[in-house]
Length: 262
Image 1 (spheres, rainbow, N blue to C red):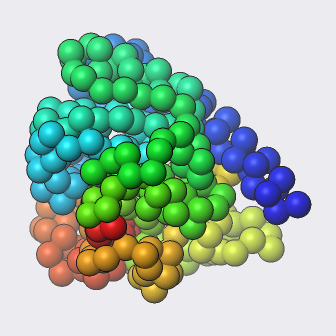
Image 2: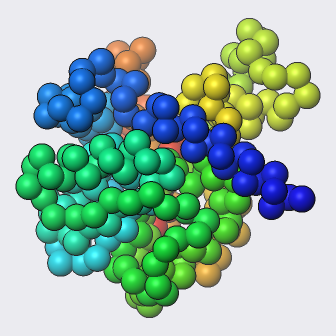
């Protein structure tokens, strides 16, 4: 029964993200055009200037890298430009097609295909690096997806994964504000419901995790390191953003970055 419920929920997740590929909300340009991809890329790294260093785009030359939930391929392209041998998977046909079009447009080697994070279509130990940014908290059985990450990673291989951070200031303040405005579903868990709505009011699933929950879920990985980061907040002045990035984001940032080895 639980498995049937999960598959029904996963179908809803697929339908939502197929209609709203992640990143398309930041531009009204024609999807699949060069201008579209460049505008999405410009916005992503202007609001997240830490990405190139923290996500290690230039450090995996010659290594086989899998991105789970490749979206529009913005990060996958950075790894490819850095010399990685890239494979992208996404639950949705729309994203997989947009990524294939993007790789071809820029003359980059790599593949993109539709796949379920909980049932990856790859042999054990297929990849040197598994990367996923803001995706695994949108699948019903995140722990199962983490087990799949472990399975397809070669011994000594590396993970770089981001999940939403439950005890971040962003979640706590957002939940408080939503309670104040009564923008939560009756009888729903307030935190989880706010996190779900963060990616759109109609988004069917979104979860967040504490550091302790992440350590339990990733217990089979060695050298586990957890850090938190925040994007540049458009509602804050440059001075306040600088203070947040330096003093608060490393402890209470919204994005919990997980690194480790198999």
